[in-house]
Length: 285
Ligand SMILES: [Zn+2]
Ligand SMILES: [Zn+2]
Image 1 (spheres, helix red, strand yellow):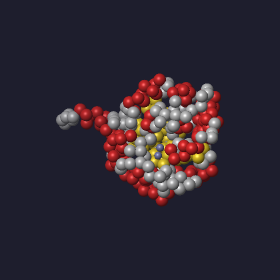
Image 2 (image 1 turned 60 degrees about the vertical axis):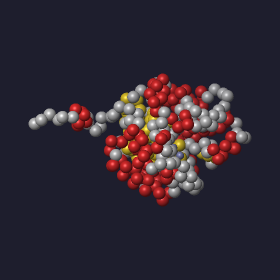
Image 3 (image 1 turned 180 degrees about the horizontal axis):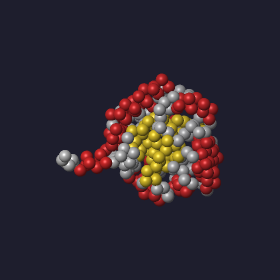
Image 4 (image 1 turned 120 degrees about the vertical axis):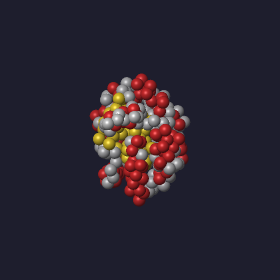
């Protein structure tokens, strides 16, 4: 029996499917269904493959239940089609190791309904986001007025309190862009150690992971989410970390990920968390 000619084929055949590929993953991709993203999902997958991502996952916005705004999330009736789209793509591109995720807003008044919606679909992971403080969409450029009469320290304290609540609510595997409150570069001139410390303690105790997101680099603040001080505390406390770009167009898939290995290492993070069927696994950086 002749030896296989192509060395590559031999290598591939010998690597069990469970063996993680080296490289980063991008677990935060959107689709145009949310009303504020562009490009077709297939192009996101192709872009991710081109960037050499070891794994990728769509996490489009779960339909908002406390309000309807078709520019913020897909309408409720489109959720099954979203799931079908991504499952279909994962079959067509097995080499992309595509995961099915969802990004759900933390809306304290609607947790039961969010849980029902999430349980109805075969998600590999659920990303929880804090985008609202008392109904105010603080990261929405349309509502920047809201910053005018608010005390920044109190605002940050409240944001990180909500992030801790999100960690503890039991609905999420990963917390998105953990210091999104800095998006517009408005931050209190104060020591944030206590706010960070309390929040990280709650996240670590809850067992939830966090996202390290390059999306902040594209926003007025021009920084990765979260700040290195916050990430250092998380890594020291053993909080699992998963990279995401929050891509709302194919060009944004894996964008600025070349910065991540150094950034993560400098914060004491040596492995990243990946998910399948809502079960966490780790791969070395
Ligand atoms: Zn979005
Ligand atoms: Zn997102």
